[in-house]
Image (cartoon, rainbow, N blue to C red):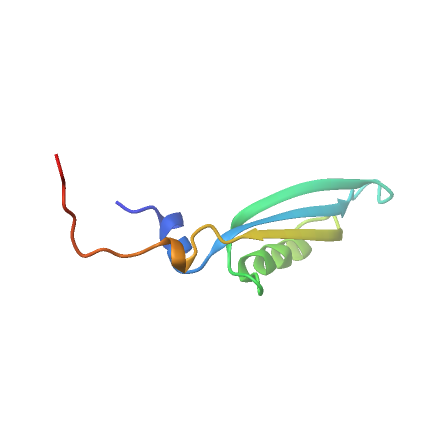
Amino acid sequence: MVSKDFIRQLEGYGLTTAKILYRMPDHPSFLQTYVWQEYDLAPRFPVLIDFLDFWKRELAGPLHSVTVTHAQLIRPAEFRAIEGEINLH
């Protein structure tokens, strides 16, 4: 069985990491760090945007800043579909 993450990579998804700084609800002068990582599509990042919308809607800690990095793990030049396989012993 093929991994769901591998299929997403073949569809163009890459590994996205976001470093989220947010203010502590009880102490707004303090910043806390949260690291989020998921497969997403650059440059629009729909999965990250959905997560940030959830954060703003459901969590008490207001966002301060978000730093995003993205790595396309499988590129078209690195993957070729093959029709057959020959084993040499």
